[in-house]
Each structure stands twice: as structure tokens, then as C-alpha cells.
Image 1 (cartoon, rainbow, N blue to C red):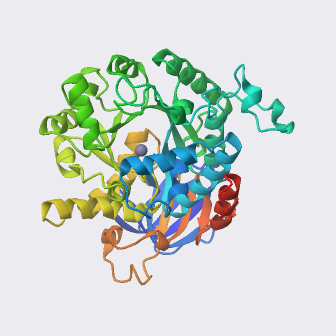
Image 2: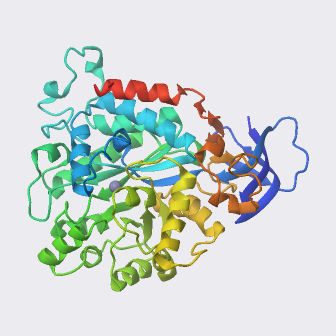
Image 3: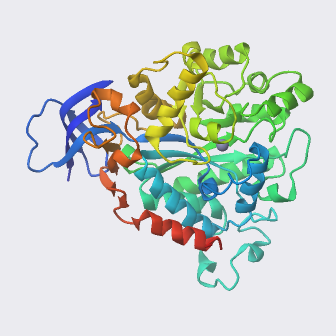
Length: 469
Ligand SMILES: [Zn+2]
């Protein structure tokens, strides 16, 4: 059984095409993309407006969404924001995190994304005890008898995977190594649940997770595979330089937070006598499978190193603005050979269009020039750039890719009159009227097809954290 969508206009092969007929097989994989079909066939669902490949959100911490609109009261800094974030992290259980992530992932789909790179470090119970380990009774919800037969190992990772699969969001679960609080500083009590003790502890847990997920969430055809595993180095603050070469042995995407704050650069200079980028380069991990997240405060040598290795860069402009991080050199990195992608990070907004516009806005503000990235380049950052960063078969309306797309209204008060692909600079998530993944409509007019009202999902999520008020 195949599924067909006829799109009034769509982004195909790097340009706007009209009358685009998409055909997907029963796995949700595209088997045909035809353009110039003037009349929709009766068996196809008609998709009005402008259809784009689904946005790829290459950097997310799902639970940070809970802080939105709650940290602006008295100014503060990145570091005081982080204290509030830790207080939310401390509340998470596998059960509540699944509820929270389901709401966030549903909002992500409504916001124009169909894939996510979830940079995940809340691995263990609050005291650092692994779920399903020797002390697992303490990690179980009190009085929860029904769940006793469920496997409890990797409970937090399973919670995220199940939440993504149930929402219909494709996930690359970036299993994160977090060993130290700062360079040569032990984890604090509130960070205990992030840690694996040693690099061997991380590598063993990561291998076990990859093996468990290969069975539970097997990789099949592009359209039907929703759960993928990758790895991440939290930052050069959180993983000692001596341990970094171990990440060069891993297959698949490796992500790292890089030079988001000047304080990280100062700590790196003090401990290693060089920048965080050069610490990574010396360890052999700066390669085409590496994604450097933020890359805000870089030297010219750092830009040349990342570009020369054809690394990926994940710009998170809305978060970087919210946390007063600064504006990273996206244009220079692209010119040097890096691939640019986008992430919503702590989700101050979950809007694929606004995130994309934020990168170009930052470029214009810091350079005094317009058109630093063309509309086509901005669409690539949101789609193919993210697909490369996460190594997912998405990002293009092309045969063999997953049938994942979003449809943007071209006749709203925001978008009326926009010409062709310039709509990437005028639309917002309010104009995304349909989100499809695996050839199934997941969100239509802001309502999730299976999960229902997204505000109701948040009501449930805040209640699960005891934060109703
Ligand atoms: Zn982050």
C-alpha cells in the first residue's frame, strides 16, 4: 500500500517546484517524487501552500523546555540559568521524563521539525545509581508493582526513545559522556546522575545501550526507523582531554558543546594552553562525523580546523540569544568548509522557521550586511545540514529518503506576498499547518493526530513534575 501527497509547491532538488506528487511505500519511504503535475490525482491527499523537507533539530535537551518563561525574572547569567535547570533535572524520573518528552516532541513536530538530535545526559537516579542496577529498588517509583517486570536498565534512554516514537519524531539519541564538573573538578551532587565514573564506565554503558536499542528499536527502511543512537562529549569541561581519543573509535555521529561561553575558553587555556577546538583536534575527534554545538567564541585557527575537517556546526541562535552567549561565526565556518545545521537547544522557542531566521539575523547584526546566507542556504541548514549532522536518511524530498515534510501556509497574514523560497524568512511555526513523518500526518493545524491537544500534554507534564502552579 502506498501513500500519496500532492503538494501545491515544494522544495525539490534545491528549488521551488509546483505540482509535486510524493509517493511513499508502506514503510514511509519515498519511492517517487514527480514535479509539474498540474491536477492532483484523486488518490492523493492535497497539501496546500509550500512544502519543505521536515526540519532537523540537531541539538535538543528536551527537559529544558520546562524552564521556558520562568528564568527571566531577575536577569541572571548562563550560570544562574543552569542552577534552575539543575533543579528541574533533579525532579526527573523515567516516568515523568517520558511524559515531559512526549509533550516537547509533539511541540517540536508542530514547530516544523521531524527529526531531533537529543543530547542526553540525565542517565541515572538522582544519587548516581544506575537504573536496573544493584540498588534498583531505590530507583523504582514507590509502590509501583506493575512496572517490576519492565527492564529498568537504560530507563531514562528508553523513556526518551518511547516518547519520540509515540509522537512520530525521528530521534538520534546522543548518549552523552559527562565525567567532571569542570576541568579536574569532581561532579557536584546535582550532577551525580549525569556521570558514569570513568571513560570505561561510559564506553561500557554506551555499548550496552547501543546493543539493547538495536534489538528493541531495530533499524529498517528509512521511513520506518525512528530511534537511532549516537554519542556525545558533553564538553571539554566535562570530559578530560586524556579520554577524548576514545571517541575517535566510535562509529556514527559524535556531538560536543564547544566554546559556548568565554569561561570555557579561559579554563581550556589555563589547563591545556590552547582552545577547546584545538584540544579536540589534538585528540583526533575533529572529523566529518563531529558536530560542534554553538562554536560561538572561536579563533581563526579554530575556524580553519573545523572547516578543514568538514565538521558539522550546530548553531542554536534563539538559545544563544536567550543565554547571552554571543553570535558565532557561522558564515566564516561555512566558507571554511563546515556544514551548518540548526538546533533549538533549551527551547526558548520551538519554531524551525524562527530558529533559521535567527541565524541570519545574527549574521546581519554582527556584519552590517544583508543576505549573509541565501534563502536556499538557510533551507539547507534546516534540512540537509541537520541530516548530515545526525546521519539520518532525511532532509530531502528524494527517492529513498524518509517521507518527512512540513507544509507552510502561503496565504497567512505573515506569509501573504512572500516570493518563492523567501518564505523561509517570513513564516513562523504558526504557518506550519501540517507535519508528516514516515508518510503519516502527525500534526495538523497544531493538534497532534494521536496525542491530541499539545497544551494538554504540557498540563500532564508539569503535573508529573509537581509543578502545576
Ligand atoms: Zn546544549
